[in-house]
Length: 117
Image 1 (spheres, rainbow, N blue to C red):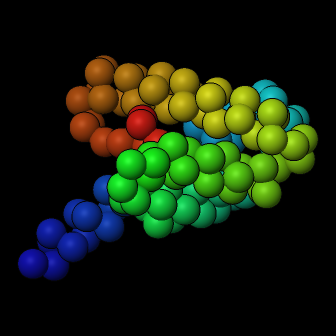
Image 2: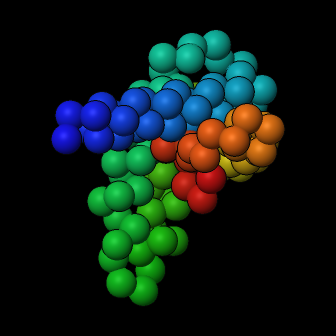
Image 3: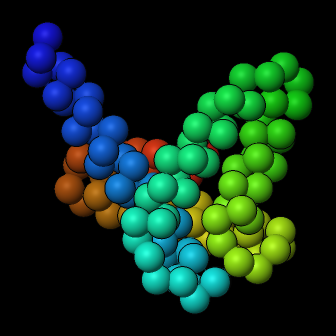
């Protein structure tokens, strides 16, 4: 039982760090910010915001995406357009990171805090 919990906790932390890395890379390129810890917190807050809204019927996923971009907008300078661009680049960065980690190393992990990755 403990090993299952530890394994789940490690998987969560690794997935959060990967999601944070994707947001960090994106924010570094788009907003010229250089704070990995800030990106990890943004990934965590974005994931919580997504979870609180994505389950809603009919428009839940669309609302969740808007709320996720709102979290990025709140955490980084530049307005809504730049926040949306950070989100798109973070999504692409997460896919590339996951392709390398899962494809070449066979880890089978995800990116917590970046929807759809």
